[in-house]
Amino acid sequence: MKKIITVVALVFGLVFSMNAQDKMMKKDKMNEMASTISLEQTPGEFTQKQITVAEGTYVFEITNNAVGHDVGFVLVPKGKDISKSENHIQTAYVTEVVGTGKTQTSKPTKLVKGTYVYFCPLNPTATDNTLIVN
Image (tube, one colour):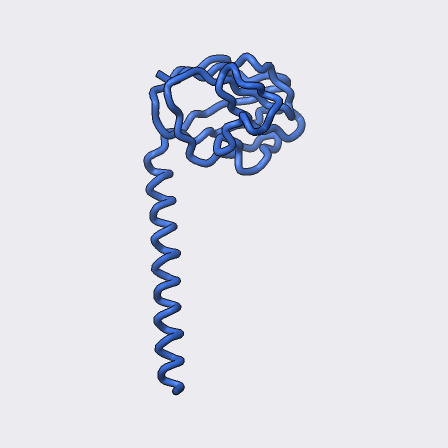
């Protein structure tokens, strides 16, 4: 009976370990395929007002350059109500707020052709910064 329990526990542990490893490999592969869009915030504004990129998967890298408090990042398709969080592309949010002098990244975000607006409600920045995807 002990042998059966040991074998079942070993098989369960092996399957769990393989599943966890597979998920990590998929996550690493997704991050490898993503390009980075780096944006810098200074007090009250982004230093880049307009960016043009090709369709694809991107990670947003947000740097807080002497803002004096935490900042974030919000990306919304142009024409959608930016005040409604359901219109935000939530994978583009930084994974942690960005402290002064720090840089944080978003999750990989697939961008399709179109125009997007980006802003920071914590800074606060203008809401007419544009990201154009060709």
